[in-house]
Image (cartoon, rainbow, N blue to C red; front, side, top):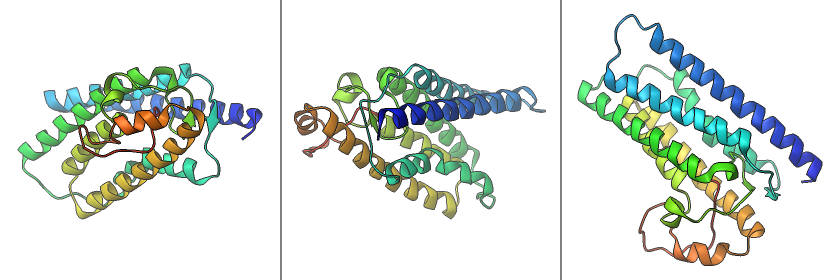
Length: 225
């Protein structure tokens, strides 16, 4: 992709992500403020955690550095978009099963943990963050010294909580599809970053892909997710 196309894609990406972030934050604040009944402390914390994550995503998107290399073809970008926004379809699914309140509270706790830890991962990535596969900088410190894709790991904690909160065969299916998309995103990102940074191989040989302390030698590395 030429430098001109990279700049155009970057501008479009910034506008899209920030517009989405503002919409989500505005919706969550409005839903919390206009609720007829007090939604409960756990629910309120979950909403604040989600706002924190989305707000952090907007900040790192606005301040991110230019790409030095991008993915080739359309598939990596479509996969990244699908992996990021697939669970928006949950609004169009049939009503979920009725589960005990304890399960729903546990689900919200998982979502809180997922959102807060994901916001932390975004802070670690900082200006190297992107949704689409792209090489900006190599991050190998902090959680990235434990696994190569800690952001995807923390996002899956949130997804598991969402599946439990709106449990049905459809949400379980969405969760499986989402994880397959995330695995494909990891491969696409590693392809780009391995080509951009010569230190990837040695990094990947030391650090497992997504499961901490898993005794598996990798061949690729990433710093975007």
